[in-house]
Image (cartoon, rainbow, N blue to C red; front, side, top):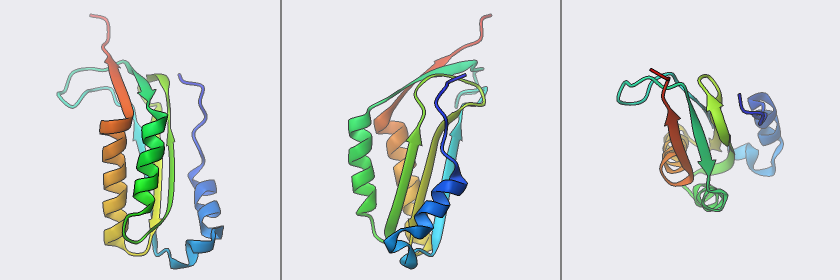
Length: 126
């Protein structure tokens, strides 16, 4: 199990609601990616090694904050060896209306998965 402590979504929401631009937020969406016991192609997974490009993550966060209607963005990405059930990432986006927030969260998670993290799945010993 990885030793990094994930954030509390309750704390993130409380902090976001106290920020200056929170008055214009009509929706918060949160995503919690977790290591599952099978890959997209159905093969068994016993864990994964996860590396993070922190520079690219910072760029993507800046870009996301410029999207229409987005006021608040929080991201935490785990790193190192992860076991099945461990958290991969927590992402929160707050913004004006549902369409803008859904689009921003979807784009942000997709960019993290394709441009920020490198996942090496571990297979169970046969």
